[in-house]
Amino acid sequence: MSNLESRLAELEKLSAPLEPNSQERSNLLNGVNAYAEDFIENTEKRPSYFQSDQKIESLKIDGKSKNLGEILELYHKDVTQRGINPASGGHLGYIPGGGIYTSAIADFLADVTNEYGGMYFGSPGAVQIEHEVLNWLKKVFGYPSSAIGNLPSGGSIANLTALTAARDHFKILENDVSKCVIYMSEQVHHCVQKALRIIGLAKATIRYIPLDEFHRMSADSLKNQIQEDRNMGLTPRILIASAGTTDTGAIDPMNELADIAEIENLWFHVDAAYGGFFILCQDKKEAFKGIERSDSLVVDPHKGLFLPYGVGAVLVKNREAVLESHHYIANYMQDAYKEDMPLNPADVSPELTKHFRALRVWLPLQLHGIDPFIACLDEKLLLTEYFRKSLSENGFILGPEPDLSVSYFWFPRSNNENAFNQRLLELIHKDGRVFLSSTVLNDQFVIRMAILAFRTKKATIDKTMDMILDCLETVKKEFDA
Ligand SMILES: Cc1ncc(COP(=O)(O)O)c(C=O)c1O
Image (cartoon, rainbow, N blue to C red; front, side, top):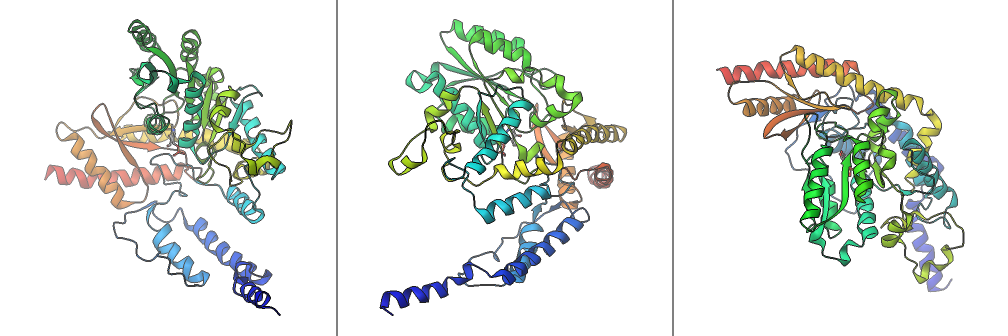
């Protein structure tokens, strides 16, 4: 055997652990499955929030091999038992979703087969599945089949993609950016402001349009502002609306905004990352009317379809605008392009190599059908009503009735109201039975409730009320002492 051959034989042996044999694979899977079973079976019995200020030292990589049991112990102690448990029905903060099991199964399959999600040439089936998910979304939102789209990692990147298309449609960077006007409300998600910075529009003129008493953008104020801007010699360009605001669960008036966008030749973008899938609920269809007239929209399956984190969606009607910034053929990619091929996800996104994340949307929809998803969304709307009623009966002041499943409340005090409610939330976090977050609205500290985790049930809300009332009693004693 030559030196080269003996070195190769040696390296083959040394790298063999990267391909566990059938028995080893079974052992690994059984170990992880046992952990997953215990996690799911007990997740509603455990706290939803583990307050943890200690630095985590145990997760460092030392380059040495360890057994799975040891690793799972660390995972339990230092990953799942710290911070929020996002899989829990008691996660009522930020925007939850839960992470349905059948999507995790899809991830497993996608990872074992390692299908290439970026180019049709490399994996026609995987890319077709992404197109089928997008086709389904187009139907759900009344978009034409000619629209294009992409499944990025989440709502932030999806908004970035849509706003980049708007920028390129108007070739904004080729002119005086500061003359370009972008309209939104103060309730827009902050990933929008981040996206505008990233795509070179930080110096555009941003107009925050006033809201009505339900936190929806006022169409009349928008009209007046556009007129004023035109009179000042500015160029109105982009209108960003929300169909489900993160803090207040409000849907901006879609049809009225679409009318204005049409007349004023604005790119009408709708961020429906949180709220979009409520369009599937019979009682909410009316509130979304007009969303089909937008130029682009964002919706997050890892929110309203309850999938594990890692998948958003963007739809854009103007194909050329998207391709302008993302389509590129490098020499080493020349084999991958053929006439009449379905669009490559890589031509619609900054990503080339792409996790086959379409499968995590497609497989649960195929396995369950759509009805259980709709039932779960309907349930979240009713639980919001139920929670708000209990809060009101117990003396809390509520924000206005939300269009969807995010709302806010506070306990009234004649003085130190903000400090009182801040302390109440601190105690709620210390308790941890259920996790709630806070926000500031009109300079007031308020506690948010975001009901979107698929495991949130009536019993969760009852538990939440018990916890809030226990904490309220303590804070009252502290403040009245
Ligand atoms: C309305 C809205 N848009 C965008 C985002 C950002 O989405 P992601 O966290 O998936 O990037 C969120 C997140 O909560 C949101 O609520």
